[in-house]
Image (cartoon, rainbow, N blue to C red; front, side, top):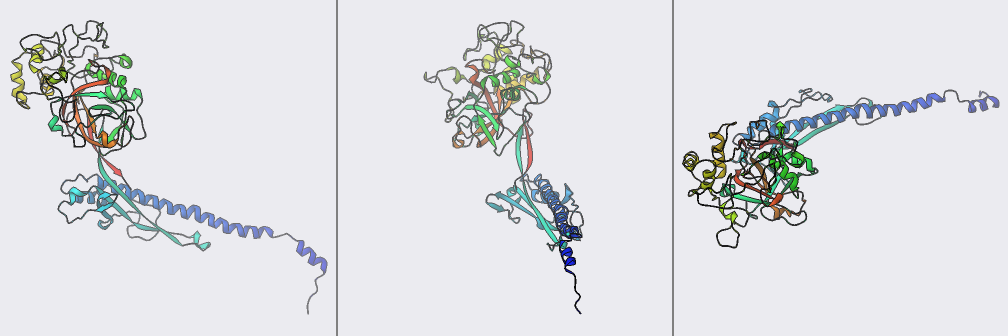
Length: 507
């Protein structure tokens, strides 16, 4: 029998809201479960993926540290990447992998490459494989995270992730002045050995004009332009502005700020002027051990005034070209330029033209006059006995300078007959280490780089070492830098450069 429910009860039932909160809670619990799955389990997956990527990166970097293109490089790189130099773990995988938390790199996970774009795989059977392997690619096998909460909302019960990394070994030059010159032999390659011992005249490049062979300017790491103080610091400080320049590129150019460059470089010659005027007792701004420059100092000042004064100045009878070695020609004398630099290019006596450059000399300079003023002519025989000659009757200024450093210990006059080359202004002895009269600079293909004042992405042909023969501004103003080419910058030389092998991730 059908039971009759009075209408007043039916209306009350329809209006009754008791228990509605239970429905809302049931719905919210489902959403909460989804949120937990997202926050906990997806977060665990992302953490696992991150740890695996870190493992791939570390393994690739460890392997890349061995890619020096020498015999055995591939075996050493593989051994390092598989755990000899790195041990990686992860804490989120739940796939019952026998390796547990360890991230194990197998031989099959490693590929060696000679190019990235396009990707070129090294043939390990090739006898030249070690020399061709410039990059290592590490592929970490996928690991899995099992989900629990996700199953409550009918989502995937697990997720997997692997990782990949590519690294290589590049070279960087650190602790050098950020300076460059245009390749005088472009489009050919600059051959340092051909120019060894030859004088070079570097002229500061213009702000907007195209740079010519022999112009010099400043380097700028992409994305970072050096301030005037940075430039002065980098040219003059013993521990300069901390920056490394990649030998493989990534450099930009900017027109030279000649005043800051000159003030920084001239510290190396015991000259302190402008912003460096108060640094003459600073141990970070000590000059070279031998500061011979052909100047006199009649007063207590340490700045340079070519027209006289109480600081460094030109002598009354300065050297102005090759003379008879038996005739004293100057009161004091620094290293002279190549003979050809003292003659106009049109007078037929010679010009400093080597290759396509009118800024590079022949390497013949008046050594007889230099020795007559500062030492004695017989000393030439001694120097030649130590170094030999670079050509017919030719010694480099750098070879004579090295003899001076060895023959006259620190604290005694370097020039027995002429200028006392010990520092007169900075009372701190020069720090041991790289020679302050030697700098390393980049030789840039300015035409290929289309250098117009400030230009990114320079094409660096070589890094070379230059012996500074005289202060900037000794003649020709702050736009001219004179020096002698020593040779190509290489690792392990006792010069002002640090060549570092730097591992780098590429992918």
